[in-house]
Length: 632
Ligand SMILES: Nc1ncnc2c1ncn2[C@@H]1O[C@H](COP(=O)(O)OP(=O)(O)OP(=O)(O)O)[C@@H](O)[C@H]1O
Image (cartoon, rainbow, N blue to C red; front, side, top):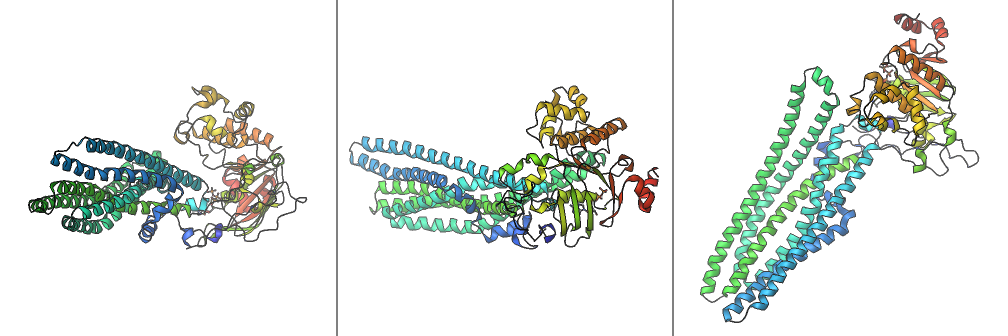
């Protein structure tokens, strides 16, 4: 799970060139182009999203949730203070009620006490409501800030990290774990704070009223405390398991929906549903377990409070009869018993919530500890004008493996691609052709060797600037949910209408745009499900062309096009190659026979390089590949 040095940037960082000798592709002086080396394997920072790890972390750090609330301290403190003030105003009510009863007992007018009592009721309710609003508002900010930070972090994750993580798991951390954290901000902190203070204040006032009755009440509180202490770990564990089960459901749903056609065609709905049912069942069971313990502690608390009320009433009545206390003292004491009961309940709930919140915080922190790509200053997202020109590419002795245990994909990859040319990468499946593109995009880094663009090591380029230079059409031409326009402008948000029209014409998408009911603004379904395979490929190519790249990478980009569209696209590419360097991966040699150069990859190396005719004449493997495709 941990990232390895195989994904690390090259350890050697060349000195920053001076202002006068800077290469046009170089980062501005003072910038940090080389991303930090990922944490070594096995280090905590290297961990991926593992529910088990989260549970251990939360057990080790039950207050973890509080660290996430720190930036929102002012709102939480204000909300808690207002709730507390509201509670204190409520607490004062029994004392005023006592005065009122005393006044009535003496036959004196009780109007003043009645007015004061009414004012206390209104002020107490208003202050508590305001406090509640401030806390809810702050809690929304906690959830929003955490979700924003998480989603930004997830989009910046290094691809090898993502390869090792279930997307559904990540989604559940942004959605359900942040919701749990949000509850800690409102109910847990404020309830614990105000509940504790009010409970202490009530106990002090009860002690002043009658210490004998207080001791009876304290026995009740001890009973409640013991039950809660026994229940809390069970509640916390069950809540954590429920969160993990929800996360698992997210992963499974993502897996199934991502390949729903295949699942249906394979008749695997039942088996996939069984997995989802199991996760839902696990969440239900864990949630029920938590509810059982919560019900036990809540019921014990309620029964204990009712019992103590009866005992206080009995003993208090006897003490009134003996003249030890007055009726008004007994009334006030009983009111405090009732004021105390919900506070104890709040404290019980707060402790359980804090445990669940800390488990959620640990799951969120795991994502933050995953390794991300470096970000450059905002201006680096746009290519410099001089970067719009075609660039030369060179691989020099590149070695790369996808992991420490994995066999190297590239052993000693060395080749040169001159600018303004079309070079085809061919070779057996698994020879490492797509990996060449991944290395060029710096999705992963070589273990050894250098990759140069116009003589400049790409490890030294700010990542946004490097990628702004490249147009990449992936093997499966991914399409995003949204409209056709969203998809086209994804890589070139500033492209104007004329550029879009031009690219639509070149990729023969103009007729599709004309046919769609809302033209470019027509939604094209989940991952472009309403488009044909060939249309999806052309959208992906159009998207890459709109970027006006200096280097165009095409990975089997025309495999699903019909003959007419493929021929048209080859004309377009021939045209584009005057202003762009093109690297194309092809299985069908017929599509690359006119390339300026063909690189035949085998066993992690370039086995042979030349034109189609040269390779036919000189290389046995190429001849066999061509013969298999009736080209020899
Ligand atoms: N993300 C990854 N993690 C681990 N191994 C990978 C990963 N991607 C590719 N590989 C492995 O690396 C090797 C080279 O893969 P690559 O996709 O570069 O080959 P290719 O020549 O493009 O294959 P094809 O022609 O079938 O598309 C393969 O053995 C593949 O299983």
